[in-house]
Image (cartoon, rainbow, N blue to C red; front, side, top):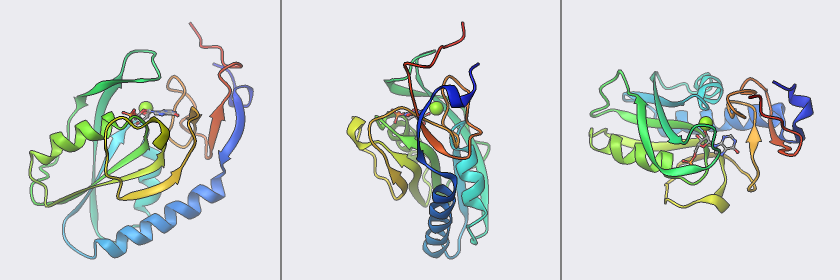
Length: 185
Ligand code: IMP
Ligand code: MG
């Protein structure tokens, strides 16, 4: 796999800006959920760094759980329109305040499917917190309750977002130069 420097077109959101916004979101969430059973649900795998950092700024006592959904064909970078749960929750969400944590809402199909699936389990409240929003690509309507940044229609990586599963560890969000990227066989 290439080094990230060789596929990076530009840094879109630097680490300091990300961390400052994540702290603001955590403060806002803490104020909005002063008490009650709060459960953060991280959508694997892209939501991991965001949820970990966000959680440290949420003063409301809360639990964490994880779920995985696949909405993309193997090797594809565009959504297929339907999402399949590949790893379900370990927690019963009935009567809990549930906050879904996502890296990015793109077409919206992933979150829309997860929301309709989780609604049937009768949580007390169900809201969406996403680090990034790419509204130009939206096809399914998704209510976003907490948003980090709105970004243009570019393929980005870092801070949880991957390019063929790599680069999720980068502390910033960068734009990929797809002309320089050479997928390994
Ligand atoms: P949606 O179902 O089209 O909203 O897709 C959401 C998922 O697509 C996200 O959870 C990401 O995993 C992935 N995704 C969408 N845009 C990007 C991007 O620019 N870089 C990396 N992953 C992306
Ligand atoms: Mg992904």
